[in-house]
Image (tube, rainbow, N blue to C red; front, side):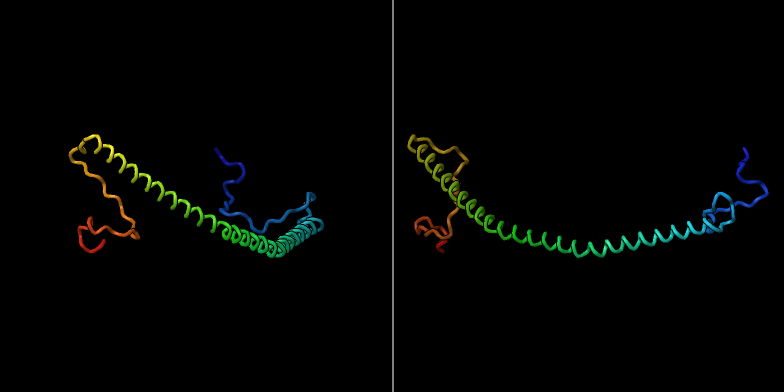
Length: 149
């Protein structure tokens, strides 16, 4: 099939014509109203570019103010959240200590009841050593290392 848009004896171009300008329908060769329309289009584009630059210039201070306000709000939230988080940590630590104490008491009670019934602990199991509080006084009778710890 032969391409009808080009003639076989005409050289084909691999790139577009960069000198193209709109012409009027009368075909006056780019004079008169077509040049005026091209100039008006370029003027409009220049005005549009100027408007965009002005809008960007005027928006920058507003955006900086918005960012500053967001930073202030984040700071206030951090200041208010800090004490709440600290208090929550304290309450969690207190609850953990209470639960640990109750668990030790329950284990002691269960072993005492088992001993009262005359039941021996299962072979291979030994009572777990309860972690000691470093601030608690040590009992010299149970101190096997002899260093007070």
